[in-house]
Length: 50
Image (cartoon, rainbow, N blue to C red; front, side):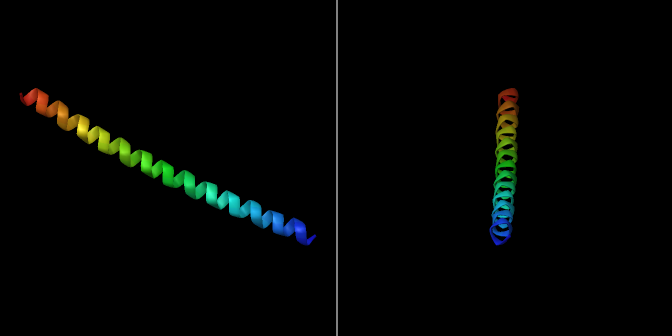
């Protein structure tokens, strides 16, 4: 029984870590996307103004 409980604890830890990494990557990607959109919008506005 003890090995099974430790294995489940390891699985929970792995799940927690993977979820944290996924959320971090998701937020990082969204941040980069917003930055790119801002840069693209600024570029478009400048080209239109010119």
